[in-house]
Image (tube, rainbow, N blue to C red; front, side, top):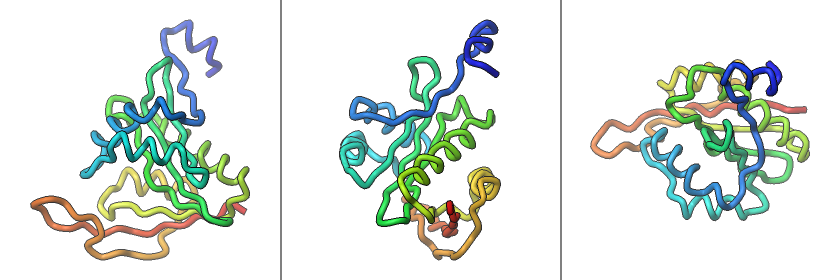
Length: 161
């Protein structure tokens, strides 16, 4: 739906765009609400200034509702994290965010993208599989949780070339 038309019905279009240093606090809040061990604002501030890190924000109106972070080396990248705020999940926004982020990585000469995902995180696994990622490995007891059993991670890969 076109942004001007969706505005007629009171729905704002989601926009994927580069994140800046002023976005560190909202990105940290979304990460903290989405993962067992959230990254702090200082971690996001550092990543936002690194030349080998690509960070996109997902914005609806003036509110940041998601993000994606990748680290690049030569012609490879690793998606470090991707999240959409809980109140905005289930609308296909993570797919838009991921595919846009992958397009920007390809535009920077990245040919192969890796990521790790919790083995029992079915929604994330479906998202990545629909985007063309395939499982290439498994890391036993990779995700440590305080006071709980460690969870396995799947290593996934997608070629962009």
